[in-house]
Amino acid sequence: MLVLACHLLPIGPSFLHLNFAVGVLGMALFFTLSGFLVTHFLIGRPYVIDFLIRRFLRILPLAWLYILIALLLYPATREAWLAHLFFYANYPPKPLIYHVTDHFWSLCVEMHFYLGLALIVSLFKKKGLLLIPVLCVLVTLLRVVNSEHASVITHFRVDEILAGGILALIYNRQLGDGLINALSKVNYVYVLVLLLVSCHENSGFMNYFRPYLAATLVGATLYNQNTRFAKLLEHKWLFYIASISYALYIIHPLLASSWLGSGDLIEKYSKRPLLFAVLFLLAHLSTFYYEHRVMAWGKAAALKVKFARSR
Image 1 (cartoon, rainbow, N blue to C red):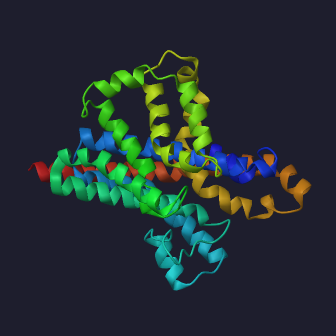
Image 2 (image 1 turned 90 degrees about the vertical axis):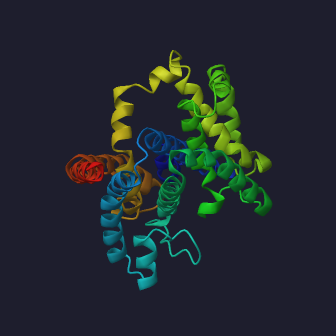
Image 3 (image 1 turned 180 degrees about the horizontal axis):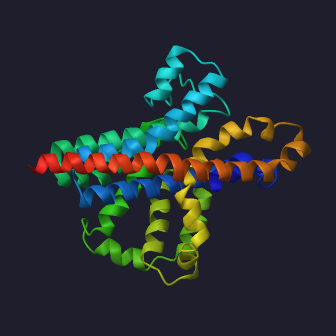
């Protein structure tokens, strides 16, 4: 929802650059949650083939359908097609199409993380996941050396996902109990303020702490379930939004580039309620009548692979 607000709504006076900050905040939280959930899954079930089948069938069906529609509507070169279909479009020459596929950089980062993590587990089994904290710090140091605050390049941004992986290791008691005790005592309000600061483009060195602040905020909610904030996150409407969030994210730029997002300032924003209504309808249909069916097939295929391996 933060990313949708960043792309589709005016957030404060333009000179404050709050749209940029809110977008960075949304992606930091998304990446942290993704890293946490994926690492948590592999800790419990370190089967690489099973993992890749599930992840690819979660990402590819809608992503590839969207790419097909977008690149047919906005003709692209063969190189651009390949870069989008195989998820390296966030690297130079970065053939992302403004307002249509420029959000695909995050999917590229995600896919690179999946493949990298699968390679680590293949080589070192589950204990290889203990490399995540080292890799996270190395990526942050690389960002510091190159003065990269909010890059779309994987090796300058993946520390936000890796920080979520660190949180999963902590949650599963792979790094001892000391960090669990520390997270249980964290005041999430203070962390949220610092995280907001770290997301602004003028916050300088604070940008380098963003992955760790986002992970700390998520961790604080995990270990402080009785707070009002944690209980708010359990609301059924937020659960519903979470269930269709991937489709919301993938689909929204194409709608914003259509008639629903056209016109001068007044006309464009007067259409926003209709745009959101259409967006949620399409995301609902995609999630429950397209993606879920493919995912069910994928889970069945993963079970067959696991059964064959066990024999």
